[in-house]
Image (cartoon, rainbow, N blue to C red; front, side, top):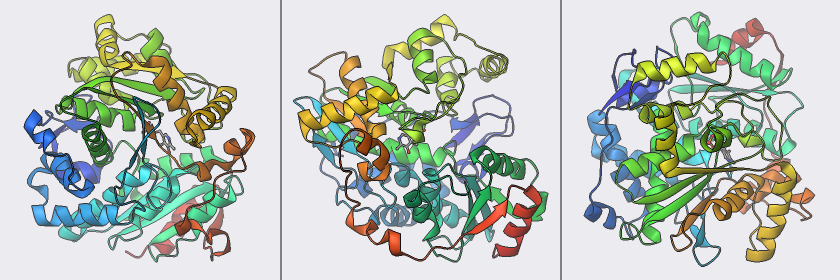
Length: 463
Ligand SMILES: *Cc1c(COP(=O)(O)O)cnc(C)c1O
């Protein structure tokens, strides 16, 4: 399998190179040169198979011969062994045709574990094979750093440094990161805000000379392996409600468009999908684009669903590439105009998007109302991200007899503030996380100064 850039200029890469590369050299994102497809019979065979086995079959065409089958099976098995549910991503019925796909049974209680558990192991495998080492750097406003840390903690060839704003993440979020005492995990509390931390990570990627030749890797959601890992549960859940013999719809709480893009990939691979519904919080660029053809930035709004607080959705470029019939130059031109101000998608591209996608946005007051309403009607306590999806699924459903699967992206215990504002006591932390508040922590507090950060990385990295 070869991968090409959405901007048409960067060289094509194989799977191994794409996993190690992240963003393409022309500023684009890598996508498969063509989508592999499954026949109806092949999809029907997924029914009843363990998650690992479906994962292997769905991802194998993307991996190609970059990894031998036995090794890849082991990587997949180990990635999902740490999940707290036998089904890995269990499905719950909410109403006669409405289902909840629980993606939060991983080590950090949010769906990002599904991709990052795999990505860490893939990186380690490729680096080990090449006899190379890598440093991972990332900035987090609280939530995603822990999933990256958990994914990389078993890696022999990777040291991971995660920057968070000092005293500006919740205690649970901090402890999820700082109580991981593995020798290759380094937490840095930056005396500044999230933007300071992120700016220093960006500057480190722009000029990597401080690492003297050691590879710097990003594990953010533009890495193709993350998308690939997420395609799996679209197949697993669709088959559980009757695919490929009937159509299915999905609703996805969305921010960077990585998760729902994986649903689009499943569709391209042959899964019969009626519609994909994008749910957003008040940071609604996706909704404005899909609903009103208004592709424009708005100021960032902090919300009760903070993992969906974004200004621009990085992975939307991957969809644009297909909407513009894989014309990298057209995508480049559109994004160049977008960086100058509001734009509209070309009418044909926009109507292509609307054949499959619908969208919905809601503010914080509505999120609280939905948490209460969903609990009253179904007995389920939803986290604030999933809540946006619950309402979007109802509002946007094109056909009430097609099963609608709403993705539950986080466990409600992780977002206590919203749950309590909605009038609930809060959900208890699952067993494997109890004791978190008593565990030993390890982290460094550093000034928001790039040289100080680089000195710290070099003093602590093992390679
Ligand atoms: C990251 C995240 C999302 C958004 O996923 P994207 O792939 O960025 O669209 C939604 N909910 C939760 C809980 C998340 O952590």
